Image (cartoon, rainbow, N blue to C red; front, side, top):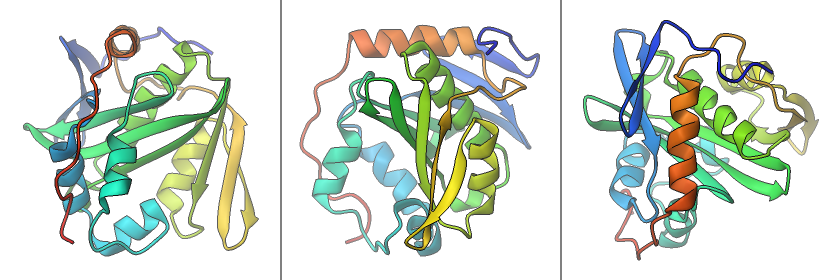
Length: 209
């Protein structure tokens, strides 16, 4: 697994990493604990269908308990990165440690920025952080109809099996063959986030209730 090979299509931009996507660039950085505004902006930018595809349940709004769980990041047990285009939150990727060397991975992108490669950038970031955090295996649960996510997750080592109408994936972590981000910069920023996590605060309403 070649972690620190760079692509000419990426660059570091201080506290975030900037990568080229279709039609522009996207900036990615760690989501801060208690950063509910960004969480809500991404949620509000997703259609009902996209929310169902991501959360596997229909959601008109995000319950406060769910918002607290999604914003309770610490850079080690629960890692999340925010993608922004022109300062606007457009996607979030995250993983949760389910065992010392295993993490469950998930990501979402707002509808109007689909098919620009933002999900691929987020997955490259997440797997890079996982690799330098001691994660060796990944897990994910995906709808059978979510073919773009399935194809992307298969590229980072997951194999899927049908179970109760869903596809349950697991496999040994591997990085994307062609880096989409400045991986050394991602590792540096991730280490700082793990050492100095923010304390979560209480959420206001997230999304339309």
